[in-house]
Length: 565
Image (cartoon, rainbow, N blue to C red; front, side, top):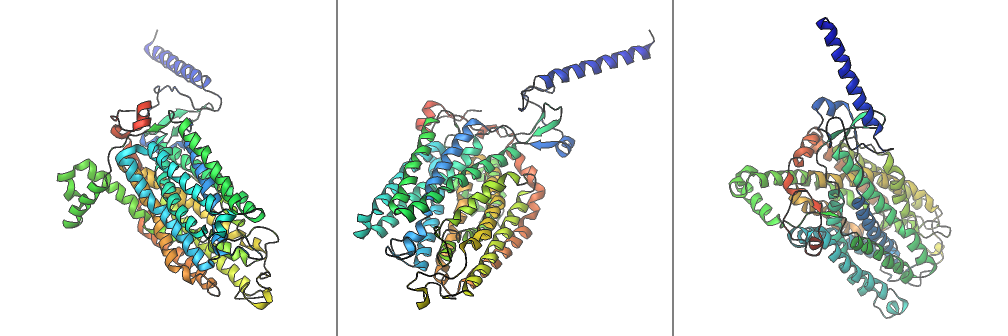
């Protein structure tokens, strides 16, 4: 047989075998699931550069243990927002207020300042929670410990909000005690639950996969982490809808009833946390890095701020990890302005609603439009845009919310009967007649802040996890959350100005400052978009810090040798 003919027949045979193999591979795929075996290897192969650039990047299957962590966070947020939803009325209004529920009668400025103090404390404590987890207990055990502390604070608030306690003057002391204890509990949970949910997904490298349709795609860990944090934030906002129930209980019954519901629901999260303990992927504590990081930064400062000057003492790997952590922390420096603005929702916006016509609705009900907007719009967020771009866009959306609030406040002031001093003139009939503007006019302000959270807050959580080195994830997450505290500290300082007739200027200034912060953020950090993939790849070959399933002993103690997953 002529040689060219033999070669052609051999080529056809090869093609036939390849097509047969591919057909068997596609036929073996599960309905709607990713295949587990590919012609290029059981676990798939890493894509080449041209494949990374041309193939579609999709997320992987979400681990069962990640859903358990999400339920724990949902229960904690149900409790937190169920309690804090009525806080402004509880603090601001008198118990005998003719229109609105009340208890302590502190007034708007004092109530807003105390609200900001509570939020400040809640976001200072995550750093303590991170240190406890990294140095001694590990994330899982730290969450259990701080959950028990949380329960003590809930009990104090419930008992001191009973009518007999309020009549005896125990309300204010009980509230402050609850704020301190509960703030410690929620902060300790916060800095550990966010990294814990992401650690449930253990793949670090992108791999090629073949879908049942025959399309070749890339399973991208970065897309999966984005999906995890979208689910995480979605659960946060499902939980925050608890304030719908608690503000009605506050209105129709009393504050003790409003606080009893979240107190009971918290045990759902604690039960899930304990029952699912064998399912979680955990990393044992490896010691807090804060002291060494501080010493390394001190050496760098004495040598012209060159981080490499600390390599002889701490080693190249630790210094490279510290550099990564500093990149993330620099990005966070604009967030206090964002959180200052965000804090208006559960303080001054509620007070604003109290000066408008509510038509039988609780004045603190509209806060729930914020989580509802997040729940509705999270699925449509584009996961492929760069994080710096998403964060900057979130700042601009938040600024537009404050600009709208300034317009609504001007509208209130232009409406009778009391114009610039709602509920404070004789025409209000002892505070029973608000200015004639329907409370629904506030709706866009809440929705715009909700949209801004999808871009700024969720992306910030993702950035804090993906850019932090494995040994510093809790600490970097704690630093990210601490930006809330800085924002709320500013809120405490400016709270005396949040009163009539200054509120139009107050909201307009917040809008302008936030817009400027968004522009400055984009200008300072837009170059990080170009190095996004390179930064995300840095953990791919680091086997030492990969998390692994917990054993029974590790669940109880959290201190065994770190093995490879």
